[in-house]
Length: 289
Image (cartoon, rainbow, N blue to C red):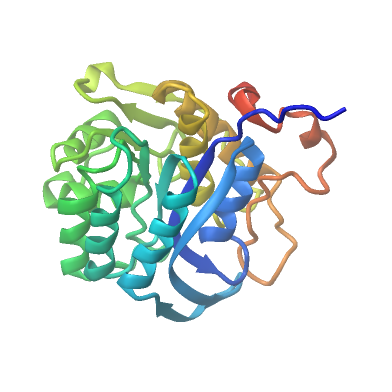
């Protein structure tokens, strides 16, 4: 006898492809699957990379990026959007226009891929301006790490951290802000909701796993956050779930793969007790470290 399948929300990732499978679109799709949503994509750039280095980047044309978004939006009810690597200003402008064509209120999670682990800036100045002016105000929530948050907030934020840094990012036009804890001494995420002051910021603590593998952790966090918004969680619940899922993915990271920094392991393949953790739907928020 046939049974009716439950509705599965759809998430759209607008980001670059990582040929090593650790970050970008590949990480996003795995995180979406982990959370029980269907993942769709609009690829902004093709990268040739592995665990050691990025050897080549080839941007996708703005027209093709828009065509991908429109193809997905014409056939699926998009429950949330995650934006990662966007490249130059022309692609950012195209993405902003495409976002305006989605139903009002569609949650948008912006992971501003701006600073490499080495500290190098990944976006030219005109692209940074376009990201701040066009994508920041269109995002429901932006999820920078500390260096990215300081870059978004400007030179006056060079020494800021925590809630004060989140306030500085919001002053640039953001709505809600999650400053992630990977570069903070306490490994605590800080969530600032629209209208909140620094004293109202929500701290989201979690364990640090220095012996894990962290390549793709930021992509995993932002995608898990988008997935939980698509599933109907409020922002605080979704941020807690994303923090826990990303930390767990680092804890069980594939540290023995490749010669460089291993990829996160959000699906828990090969790591025994991780399979006991809820793996889909609204149970995602129950993940604990």
